[in-house]
Length: 259
Image 1 (cartoon, helix red, strand yellow):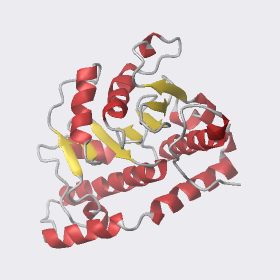
Image 2 (cartoon, rainbow, N blue to C red):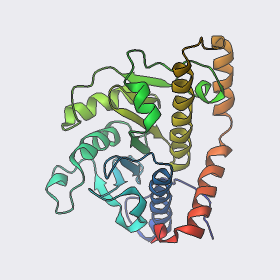
Image 3 (tube, rainbow, N blue to C red):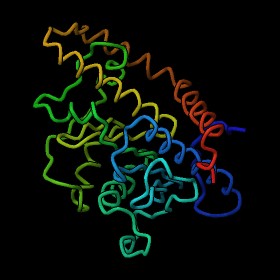
Image 4 (spheres, one colour):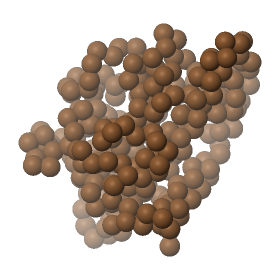
């Protein structure tokens, strides 16, 4: 049976949090499996994380070098953003994952679930001189006023300074389109983060297809885009339903994600 998607604020330790922590692991493992199915992963790169304490500084993250399609709940590392010895652990995470996610969780406690991918259409949009998202359909309007664009790419995120820079761009709960790089989504729950990432890539696909025609875009007025974005924000049950159905499919077809 598939548990209802949730993202509790878990206690730092103690038996009362064991079941919640297990379900948090399963939610995040399901997200890895699903984005692999959608072809939005890249080799054994990219990384997801999920805060599991009230302060948001203890978090789960995928181990280095593990393909998204093989991630299980028990594979996820439990890390502490304040632990200076993390990269000296025998099971140390990917360095870019640590410097980016570690600093985001250290600085932004509201960014509880952080997903970073290089999906085809979002990455293509990030490579354009103008990476803004025009409001041309419901999906693109979902991100009206909430899309931050990083114009400062200078190489891979291999320092705390780079992680701090990216964390600063995310303040306010925005989706971050990382220029010349990919996309990063931060949300309060796994369900919302998964839903945001899915719809953002779909929105980018529409934009890039429209640009490819070379014909003028049908851009709606700002007021319409803003109204539609508010309507999306009030449609929170969609994300819960989305993750519930993802887990139901995986329960039937790839149940080892729960292990």
